[in-house]
Image (cartoon, rainbow, N blue to C red; front, side, top):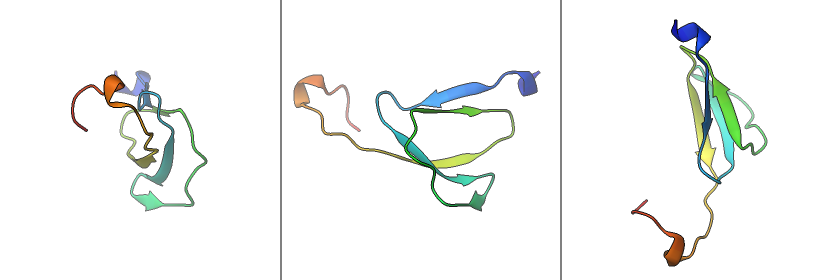
Length: 61
């Protein structure tokens, strides 16, 4: 029953901007915190980079 199980996607404390939905380009959305994705939906997005101190860095991105 994947059609009844949407997920909410977010990129930690970064803002995202959707630019493609289901292989169709459109005017980018405003910066958002999260997006709800249902089964069989595809999104391309840009993530806003933020400056962080090396003390808070976990891993290599």
